[in-house]
Image (cartoon, rainbow, N blue to C red; front, side, top):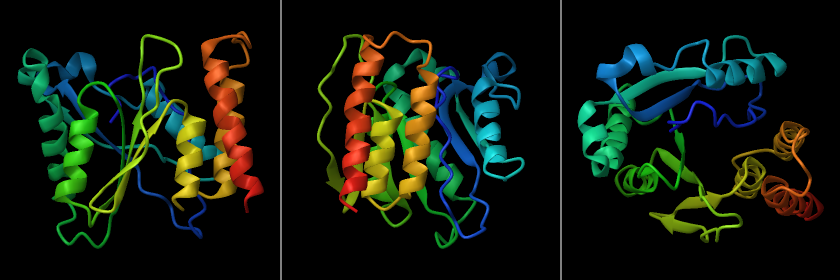
Length: 218
C-alpha cells in the first residue's frame, strides 16, 4: 500500500536469475470516485521512482502494476480503510485463483489501518502472503519500534527506515545482501542535503549499523 505519493522508497529489485520481477500492485483507500484528481499516473513521483529503479537494473517498463482503489465510504468512515484494502487484496489474488503463480509481500505503514489489512491477509491467505512489512510513522522522534511477530508462521515486520526494512528482508531470505546494500546506498544518498544531526539520520545510523552486522555474520 502507498497512500502517500511523496513517500517513495529506494527501489529494490533482487536477483531473480534473469526473470523479470512482477510489477508492484497498490492497494489504496483513495476514492475511485475522485480518481480524476487522485489517480496514480505513470508520471507520478512514485511511478517514476519505480521505473527508474528498474531501468538502472536493466529492466525496462518495470514499476506500478494494478492500482485498486477504495470509495468515498472509506473517506467518510475511516475505520473501514483496513477492510477495503483487504478486499482489494482479494480482488488482486482473484487474478491468480490457483495461488501457484504469484506470492505477495504486503508493505504499508502503521497508519491508515494497514496493519489490520496485512494481518488479515496473513490469517486468511498465509499460503500466498509471505510477509507483511509496516513502516512505523510517528509525529515524535525516535518512536518505539514494535518487535516482529508471526501470524500463521508468516512474519509481521516493523521498520523505521527503508534500510531497516531491507535488513529484515535480508534476514528472512527475501532479499539478497547486494540488494540490501543498494538500499543502504540509495537511502544515504537521499539524505545528502539533510543535516547529519537530524532525526532522519539518527534513525538511519542505527539501521545502517544493523546492515553491516548482518553482512559480518555471513
